[in-house]
Image (cartoon, rainbow, N blue to C red):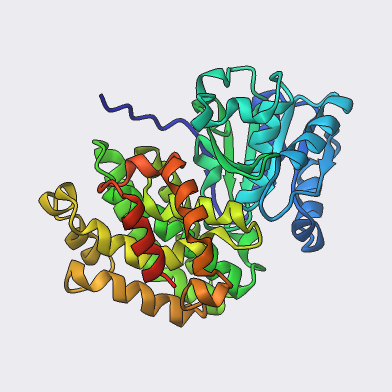
Length: 379
């Protein structure tokens, strides 16, 4: 049976950050905890958010790592409880927003975070007690501001997913102006993350026509504007707006499911947390699209041809090479080897991918041998 759910209250506009206090008041937050990271603080975006709050009492946790960890969640949850906070403002990219979702669980539920991981059967254990979240994205990539999931590295080193409709932020403030200062390479990597979300969810075989439509439109917007946003992002507000929409749409759609791109990225990112998730997705996407071309559901519903049309390409068979060309034009690495990945790591990556929550929703179920071939093709 298909389950389709769209629930987030979204404020989307240039300068929408000014609505932050209004959204706190709408949700009844009297002392929120801002969860952010050192880069956001250094860029002055934390100051802008605090200015938007005015004299509303609040606390700050600004030590979210690039790949959020259970240790960071514990540290932020301790501040939340010590300061008597009643909600969260997640300010940053996917890392800060996912960290805030971890805090929303840890500050209101007993036991270790792993107890609530999806592959540990933890989703039903996440209850309505979770702390309410206002998400303010500063990148255009993960779309975590409208999604029900978070990806966190737990204490045993695994990179796990946490999924519950209770984790969907109560409010998302999408302000393209907050992405103007994003460096070109981070714009490219996060933008390709958004494109991967749109493409993978569109290829997934679950029945969710609204997700398909949202994903295909998001792909159209993201593909047409990612180069402009990367090369001239500080001056091209329209490109930033369209890329932020693609990011939001990809995450609204991926409730339908993702696939091998993400199962591989999650596994490899857990093995080496220094590797950027969006960049990994960009590396895996061409090989996975080629692999998925043989899936019956992809063929029957002409999924590749429809994506090719959205990307301005003549044929679905042109997509893998177009993705490689886009990666090159954006200045991203030309393969996993350029990121320092070695073939000796393959077996550990495959073991993690087979257990990942995205593995089962790929339109063509991958075997150990398939994953090995995908890794080799992505080197």
